[in-house]
Image (cartoon, rainbow, N blue to C red; front, side, top):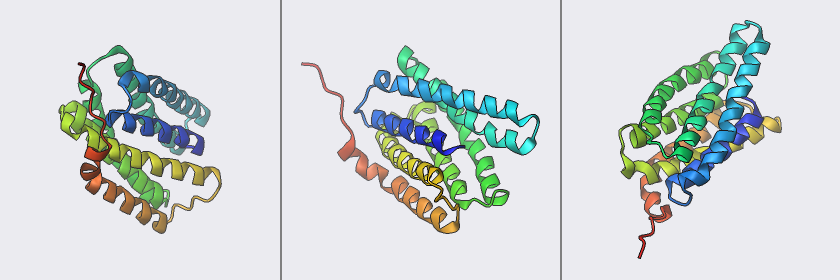
Length: 202
């Protein structure tokens, strides 16, 4: 995925994390999900057509659809008021797919940094499965915290790619992995302080 695309992935993840913490309604978060989702469906379609059958380029573009369908689905659910169970189960499928892209980054591309980022995204999608597919709403605020941290790491990677400073080396990978693991461990602790409870009408 290009650095430009990653910038908007980071942006929409941040907005969705804020939504899970109760600071935005789904309707308020919906438009950006639709904008980014449309971008992340158009882009790989163009790239696959331009690849003209090149297997490596087609595979590289295919992962972008995971983001595109995710954000379109979230946006439609938010604006139409649909339940999130269907998307939640799709998120489980996506979480499994991230293992393939992570393995490719580690083993074929020699990019340990993006291997770790794919794994962090996989954890995030698995949390979406728990919150929405299995309807564990109690995990929503903690998932919001982890989403915001993942959004930040995604944005950092995006700007490193854009500025030509991304190495994909093991030092970057270990730093990202450590931050992601700490976020996962402490998200439940931080969530109560950051969660905005719904206001009860008088």
